[in-house]
Amino acid sequence: MKAMLAAVGLAASFLAVAPAAFAQETGITVRSVRVLATDVDALARFYSEAFGMSETRRPVDTPTFKEIVLNSGSTPGLAKQATSTPIVIATRAKGGPHAGGMAALILEVPDMDAAIARATAAGARLMRPVAKSAEGLSYAFLTDPDGNQVELLLRR
Image (cartoon, rainbow, N blue to C red; front, side):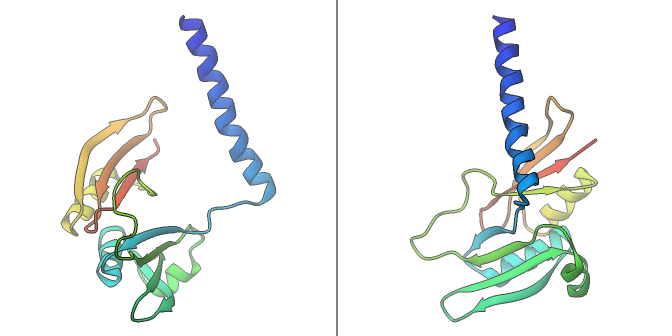
């Protein structure tokens, strides 16, 4: 039974790597991560305060729908130069998808404790304590003020 489970695990890890390698070879990259909000400006402030991100642009800003693009950087200039994947905070439509479910946003952090402290000070709620994966990654889940799950990840 152990041998069978080991074989299944090995096959699954090969399959998990194959799509990533394929995506890299074809030039497919993550363009952005969309986070829905009932108050787009307030949630953008949260991500700025909690994770040191800055606004780079507002592609849409109408009375019924708004998008604010944020990226890593303490100033808009630094955020515009960042090569990391941006976050798009967009209006959550009335009757549209609700917050929660699975984390749609995964942030790699250099210091887990500091990231959790900063996020909770800015209004996040820690869902469960820090845990370690079999690969040695530390991770924690929290919710932002609008109920979206965020996963924090630390590689060491």
